[in-house]
Length: 151
Image (cartoon, rainbow, N blue to C red; front, side, top):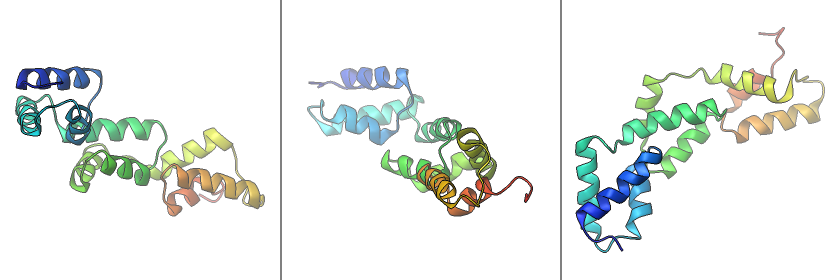
């Protein structure tokens, strides 16, 4: 059981040394081990003040990471919301690290499926479902699957 401010800060720093975490993630991970929630909030406030913990930095790193893995904006935003990042930070990270979601969806579709013909409706629908499940919107998925000759 973590009781002192120093123990809680040390536990949080150990987690942050592995990867960036949002404040909500740390509250969830460390909160169950804390004797007092007020001390946890104080420790996280101190880490934010010292620059060890930053939701804005977490959002930027998370966006870059998930976009590189081929996930679309809808899924990334939903996962960020689940991790306690609000829409304003999502938008800020997107402004700082602009991603061409249309071209990313097209590259993913080419890598995963090769050339997709709209004549083969069953295969086209499978590819479309894949892109939508990855978090791309309908417009981005259609763009990704249109024939290269049409674009």
